Length: 52
Image (cartoon, rainbow, N blue to C red; front, top):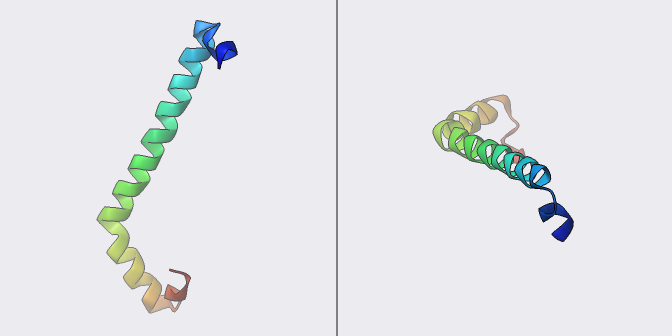
């Protein structure tokens, strides 16, 4: 951790990478909440609902 804090550029890069990953996770979760039912119904119609 001290090596990460020794250079401010590394800290900024780590913060940006963490923010990007967090944004991706939140966007995926939001998409699942909005479209999860449609995805599940389409899976049932195609016979692959056992994966869930």
